[in-house]
Image (tube, rainbow over all chains, first blue to last red; front, side, top):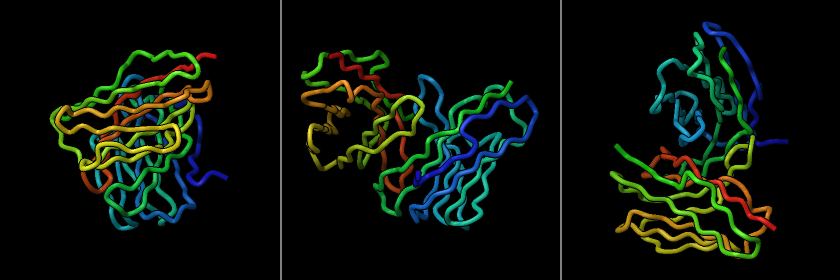
Amino acid sequence: DADVTQTPRNRITKTGKRIMLECSQTKGHDRMYWYRQDPGLGLQLIYYSFDVKDINKGEISDGYSVSRQAQAKFSLSLESAIPNQTALYFCATSLGTDTGELFFGEGSRLTVL
Amino acid sequence: SQKIEQNSEALNIQEGKTATLTCNYTNYSPAYLQWYRQDPGRGPVFLLLIRENEKEKRKERLKVTFDTTLKQSLFHITASQPADSATYLCALGRGYNKLIFGAGTRLAVHP
């Protein structure tokens, strides 16, 4: 079983709909992240959380919100999806060190029509 | 603003040869640099970390160099195999895991 699990893996939705992407992990890491990947661009950080009571905006947080329901669960929401939010979304976890490697989920491909 | 450049064109090499991928950066002073491998439709997988005070790091067939004067890291895969075909991402960091990722370079190793 995957250590970092994302659901759904694929989703097609329409403009204006609310979408939630979920992430759960069994690695026991405190730190969790949501990234977005677009063709030809590097992974961009949307939100990150260093523990259950800590939520921080990344470089592209507009149009997104997150919820850290437990140490193991971190959800990303698009309140009103728009076509330019069509992308591949990754959840990741890491240890609490300054150089800790990221462990990524398999990704959630979102298409907004 | 910070900028990371990786070759956008795919690197095609013959099996058995050494693949060398480049990561250049500007307007940033990273404390460390990481390399990840990403297969199509999959999440990136961590390969190597190198710190600013290290010139070179090795792991099996992989070697990474880090030149803070040139603002460049080179990633080498020796005796390359078709199974090494993937996209390789470099990422720069300076504390607290807020990594900045390059767009990646696709490597294709041909038999």
